Image (tube, rainbow, N blue to C red; front, top):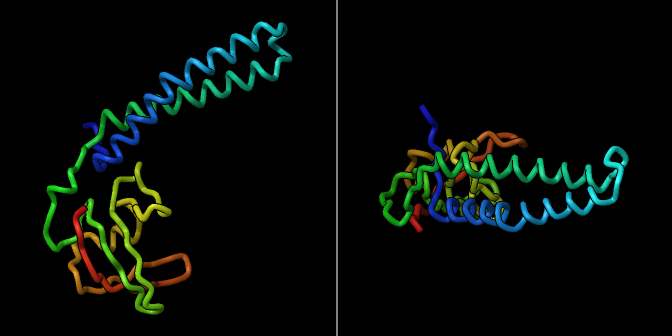
Length: 158
């Protein structure tokens, strides 16, 4: 059985855009670089040629990876979700019980997780601790620096 990859519609669109870029822009550019490097003669000592072939290999590998993830995508429309129990797609406001610092995280699929943008993977320790919990409860998460406690201040769907 094929394992589905959960993701939001935005995450799916981002992967699609990257795939189109790699297929229609990067691939032809790399092929051009290979042809140009090949015209310089002896391929055994041609660093440009080897670099272009390496770039081609990396690009084709990423294209295959993107195609696989898109084929297995299970798109979850967060706008249609609701309730006060945390699950995939929820945007959760947490308050650190030690520092009173507020953080906001959206729980998303692995392929679209980006801590800088406030999106954590459903497989992360924090997300796993939050799943199934409700607003007002406290969760404890094992962090690299030891256990951290957070109060769930808000659960939103956006």
